[in-house]
Length: 85
Image (spheres, rainbow, N blue to C red):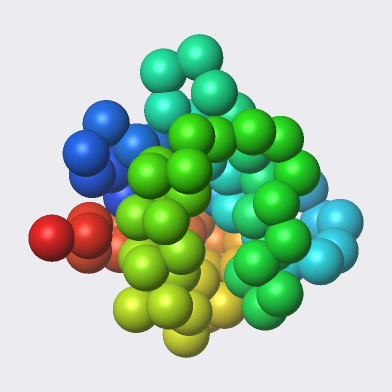
């Protein structure tokens, strides 16, 4: 699973598995979740403070995430995205 960003111990990854909706994966310690890019629907569990950081990052990088999703659908490698600061 290609890692596209890392901040505050949070690892963000995307892979082209071809199933909708467009989403990314989050790992934080033993926690794992999948988050849809457009609606922010969370599957899995993350601590609340981590989830707040991930949503702030998602808001700042929505267009880049969608670009990466489209790259993956074409069989291309996703690009790195700047971490949350």
